[in-house]
Image (cartoon, rainbow, N blue to C red; front, side, top):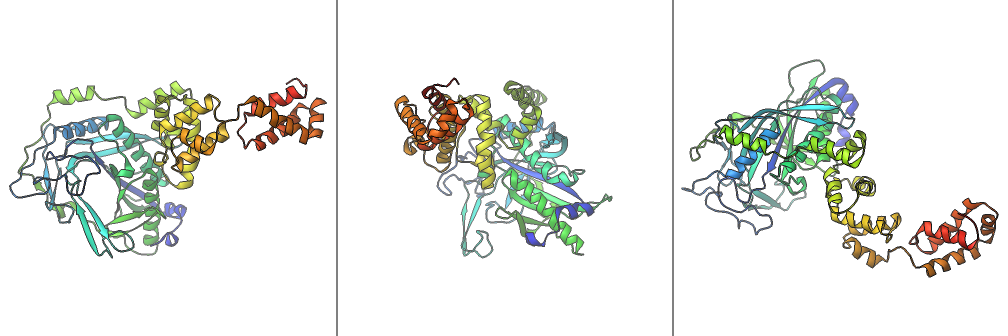
Length: 502
């Protein structure tokens, strides 16, 4: 089904009530894998960070990563979960080439954290509580690269390459309870939840949670039921959605797709689906298994995990400032309204602005550039703000160049344009493009004299008391200097040369 086959979003919600479930996988930032000592560093040669344990060789035995357990407990506590006094790992059995053991070591009916919640703030300030079913520990799979074919997926490929460096990297899977009552705001709730969860994970320091690098990815489960009914419909699961914008788009598309199928008398197939960034659509993957299809059974090679209550409380006491508390503090420090802070949050700019301030910019300037020019560019490119190829340090340098008079706003925008185009850091762009403000008084004086001589009638009006007409001469000078003059100083020089009080 394509975008053009969908019913309108409004018509879908007039008939059906969406129910969502969100499963978020977080790659932990541990130095070694979950059950062996192999490195988790990125960028290594394919299959160079493997051992008999993560390759599932006969006779190899796993050992639990203690930091992984600690990270799982921190996440559970931050999500207001209960922490299990005793839990264990299980084998989730299925065959796929990127799973070298033919089973995934995970947790099933005994997760380490369960029964929590996360409050998320929507664009208009409304607080929506998302209830958490569980957060459990598991390991990641390897990576398949399909060669040939038009889509890069297995269908149509000539052959596939397998890299097991990622196999065994620690994951925490966070599963919500069914999210009901969101109505037309369901896609917005999905995006806000993943955004808040990402901020929380980063605040805990357990992962960088970079969605564009796969360190955090979301499976969007969605079903529709006729308005006024209680029974859930058949769900679809859109897998591995890796940006906030895409989470929202995937939920919206599936609402419209389900409604189109149901309204035409069709039946929803319980299946996994792939999300396509180019048009926001999803396509069928494989029929979705039920839990019993995985034939879970307790992992015989790992002892149960039984965190002491003293350790849990010690970790609770050491939790950092959590995102909502931090945002309230920053709002007061920056002297902005709740509405302004909500706009910053919606844009995904809180950390970017904070890092820019930490790099030396004042908060007003940092907000101006991230929420203005840079937000505009991200929107035009259809990407998250954090995905722009510019760093907070570079933005701070641009603000410094404006503050010391080297750049005006127009030149600063051109400098940012150059950085985004890959031309180098701000100073390099300024040098290459010749963007510095013309501050030489002699050069400015000459440009002013020429503008006055070329616009004698306007100069006479200014001498006659119509000071506002000076703007036309300022414009002429700015044009002559390619926008690189200090407009305020140009105006001063014009009035001085015409013998008029400012």
